[in-house]
Length: 303
Image (cartoon, rainbow, N blue to C red; front, top):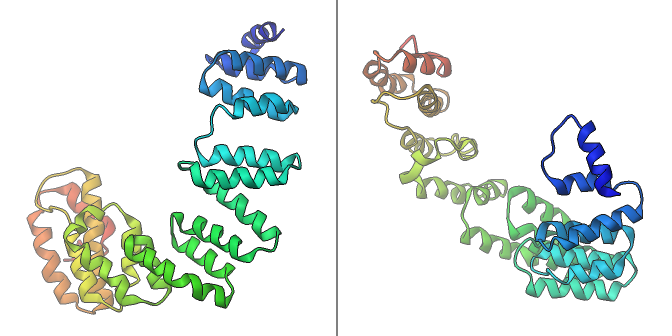
């Protein structure tokens, strides 16, 4: 029956579909019997991707025995344990659900987000604030960003935040990335934020395409113009070679950052002209260079 429907759909479908599994899936939408037949066909292929679809179909149509049989074949990631835990929770076997999730926390390798939040929500529902925060902290600091920092801070009561704050600061020291800098800025710890740009000054050029780094640096310009100016200068590429317009544009943006600090922040237009004029003259025979720089830097033609 399914194959007959596949042939009919193949003739009527304007978009060519070369995947027979998708054709079968599109065909088997009429009732649970068709879905069960499709799941069996997927299962018989004995490959990971079709078996995964078969498992989902059995779960959907309420064939718990087949779902559990196929689910047991692959319990590797946190998402696998979450799928099984949420299944048990959905059918009312709550102890099995919690035990499965806890087992996953010990045994699973990666993709833990849903599993952690499952346990966090169960603890919250049970009024176990300490366990809830333990899992919520683990979730929000697994890939710590300014957003996740704020979310955890907002979730904590004063005494709870005091307990976790030092743990977060230790994490910032261990992975002093641009998100850590954002968090230090949010906490008004400007000196700590500045250290990032001092530490990475030698590799500043490699941030040339990273707008996030420079948007963060911009927040420190008024407080530490000399240090940020040095970082900006080191982010400029080689200005004395022919290159593509894309490279000219990136270099112009880097030079524009220098201009902003010298002219707008430090109020030293003469120093800006002294810095920029040799760049212009050395590239006077490169029209594309001049066009990109004049497009990005307001007073370039008037130098």
